[in-house]
Image 1 (cartoon, rainbow, N blue to C red):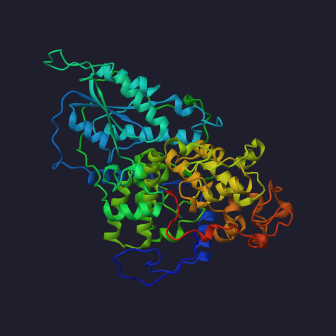
Image 2: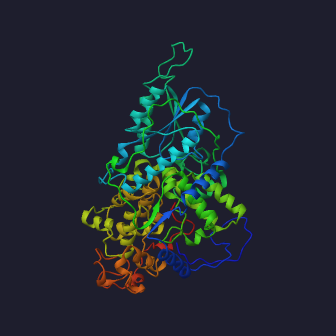
Image 3: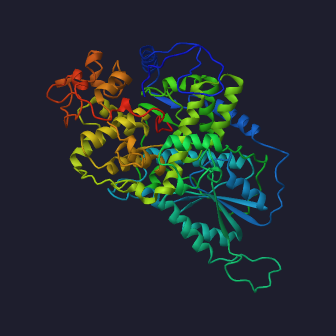
Length: 584
């Protein structure tokens, strides 16, 4: 989306619209990029996200927990026996309904995380690693932090290595648990595991005091209770069922905004204990124990895993740096930690609740200001919700070459071409810089993701699933719904054909990296070139692997040719109101 936003004087708004910004300072494309570049040059080689000291993070975390801890008004704890909380992609204490329901229904809670070897296997179609080392390290940090936060509240976290469908029923039997609580997932691999856990739990019937013994065997079996908790809007509050979900995002958004409400965050008691008596809780693994080689971020952004870091980032971006008020203007940046919220890695792992973000946005609007930028963070979270609900409607079509619309396209699977894209060796600096950032940090800007996707499928003609699976390997913020949902849209096989669009590399470079600072950062061999040459370096850089379908070619290398030929559905002419498909 174009960054050259017209700024209007402050308004009194009853309804936020895309044209009614209420900033007190003026931003332009040029001075915004120069400020990003100056920060990038001035900051250390590695930029920690969040940029808080450990002491600051600890203070923010404890203050946030205090705000969401209630000593009155909670349901009384009347339950008996043991309940298990099976942590999956919900590695947090705050606003965790599974944890709260377990507390209410039991005398003791056993929190469990299964280090599932399936997650460290290979992808379905092209055999890439399902989880790369950087995301594995992020998960490890998140587990360490979850364990620490649970211990502070009278519990602990049991770490078990193996398949959940074997471990959870075994623990239910060993601890005579009456219920296993977990958050519901939507895609086929995760749903299959849920079904196997349920089936295996039926084989164990915990004893019930005073039982007559004439009940059917399955009546008193340990139950798996799946709870919806990964979206801002609850699935039960939608104005339609998922099978009737609109095929167009704007229709979905307008419907939920007008007809649905966002539930409050779950409040927790000060203490969640006690746990049952446990002999060995297990240890959080090292990356090498997962069959991976340890990797360290040596350049760019280094994200810290865990709920404490997630809450610290919200505080840092919203309150300390006061950047929420300019989010809509800066969100299409590429360089540095602060052009966008960077919440997505913590959202994907469940370290951060989208409802918590919603409540913080509303608190910010009340205490500081409300404008298009504050609304736009919620707008992007609704996109994330949409992809989650859409995955239920589309099922495995989300992963098929023809996508939800079953489009018949003869995709190439040329491995040499794909490897050039994957390694950042295409000969196009904007593509290569983005791919090197992904491999080095596990993150890529929303703008970058759209550009490299368009290049892979439009200019190279490569099967989009190869790109999606590589993103699955690398991204810290990988989740199947958003990742494959975005790739189907980018490849033109998504459920809304209006999202079929081409991204012109020269135009994208001109709009979003006009000084060439982003490409010079990730491709230092280009820094010595004049800024106007960094995106079209000619013989000073790699020979382009393919000619662009629309833009300068390897023959001319002239960025002025970018606008001579445009696709029928260019990126900048997309239908108004659709917005970006991001959570980044």
